[in-house]
Length: 103
Image (cartoon, rainbow, N blue to C red):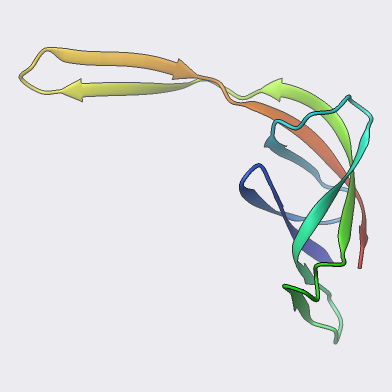
């Protein structure tokens, strides 16, 4: 069984035991949180639950760590105008370990 959860404006496919990097969340390492479920997929005859059917489902997770991603370079350039700008960016993230998926 797996679920589609949304956090930080992005959607992630998770199963029990996964460690997922999501956009930065407030909380201490080791603290528990619940993520809302958009869709729930069973491997048996129950099939797929979405919308109001999956609204009661919750994913219990634990914050495993925080960090920053690798640097990406943003380069702006206009030809024939001698215009060049370089900027770097590192996105903050939180590692979340998925516990139980409660349907």
